[in-house]
Amino acid sequence: MAASRRDGNESTREIERRLFAAQSFEGFLEENASGMVTPQICYHLSELCRARGLKAVEVIRRANLERTYGHQLFNGTRKPSRDKLLQLAFGLGLTVEETQELLKVARKSPLYPKIMRDAAIMRCLYDGKQLDDVQALLSQLGLSLLSGEDQNG
Image 1 (cartoon, rainbow, N blue to C red):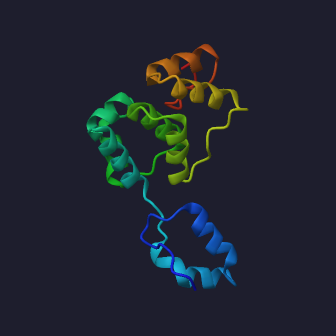
Image 2: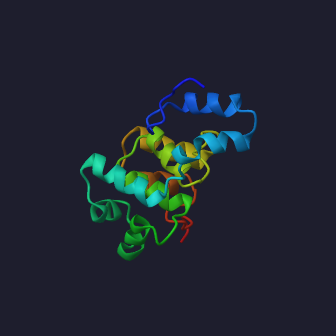
Image 3: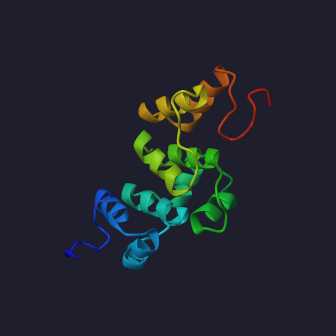
């Protein structure tokens, strides 16, 4: 077998190529298990904060999350819902692509532009809006807010 990069920086295409070239899935795992990880959302959130020079407490405040709950998300003792992840995306100032990756890491469904609520959220992310802006738009459209509350209370 030809030598290939297995330092964690190889491309997804290379991993996919090896997956499909393997005689069996078991064989693929035997050869590649040490390089495969299931990222935990708390580590991903911490990395996003570090990359932006933000502290968790600042992101939690900007995401309008209850302080204790927010810290539980960052330390991995709680698993966020899709809407809480979207609130964090606004708190972090993520792009649409970064938000989709956040949802993927957390094993939540991606934003889908054919769904009006998701399209509104995507547009607000694209425009660099704040959480209050998306909440106002969702309310104006009669859609449920990211906090999980219905616009009527």
